[in-house]
Picture 1 (cartoon, one colour):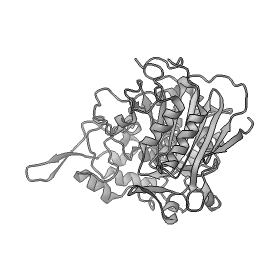
Picture 2 (cartoon, rainbow, N blue to C red; picture 1 turned 180 degrees about the vertical axis):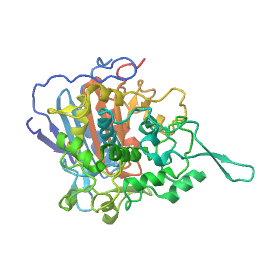
Picture 3 (tube, rainbow, N blue to C red; picture 1 turned 135 degrees about the vertical axis):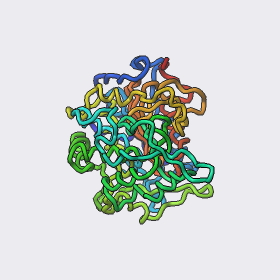
Picture 4 (cartoon, rainbow, N blue to C red; picture 1 turned 60 degrees about the vertical axis):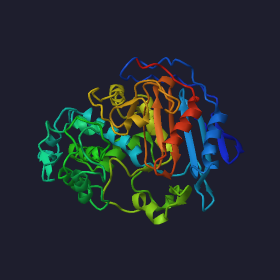
Length: 435
């Protein structure tokens, strides 16, 4: 495909219109509920509205820079960028800017693990300890006794691989208000100077927050998935991903360890502090991607460009294949994009804040239309995830659309996601019904 041609520069935002090419429609993915292949309302992109949303994020001081790449109906539909990748250096947010994507690493791990599932290496309902024996004797925190001592008991059932895929294992993910959280902090399983095997041993010594399958709670589970990839494949996790995901998809600039030559293209990290955006020191920004760390996180750590990550998103939109490279079977992608949460799992942590969604394999999955004006716009059947620095991607089979949104702002700002979705879909968009 020809490279899109820039049409104008206005208010600091660069717009790109796609070349006029014909392309076959892509097949829709299945999900729980009726097929979304026939949207309730036709989606036509308003490019000015999208550009205004990007520039507005910067003009109001909500972020230093932002970009979005949209693929629709088999071709690139839009690219736009506003503001700065490095405000202090005067470096604009450009298409080749490299961003730290944090938890957008998780869907990559899910794809790698499901690649092994297709090979018969594990079953969803296998007890985790069948593959990782260190988890056989794990305990569950159940409150305190009359004397104030913690109570630990055996889980009501073993952790299954399914639990690890959908965040129902009971693992912690940082500090909290229980002794189990304290044990997690003391164990420090995400220390960058340990490998995945040691990470697993440390996690297995930390009590679970609840019995497996009882709740949904975002956790270190996807790093455990990365350890499963290593054990089941016999390869280092990063090597397996490179060989079976990145190289076949032509994702040449996505990596945990970036070459030093790419440092000038890394977008700076900004944090909201006292109503101002404060730039993180370079030394902090370099820690994840420009030094040799032993830990290759399954749930964090990748840096990428919008074009590279779009190749990953397009593969999912195209049911596991891109440009002749098949990564997963169509049925496997449909399975990943299907809500895996039992309706009895009513305690879902922050997940309802993502909208009318369930959870599949490392994706949130939209199961019904937006419920109110403050909920992000989207279509039933879409699946998505985001990152700590406010990055986002989603795949919308109903509209044959994929989008990748990059910015580098902490703490996580979901209002940016609400606004870019409203710009793409329109503020009143409901899409197909999910019932």
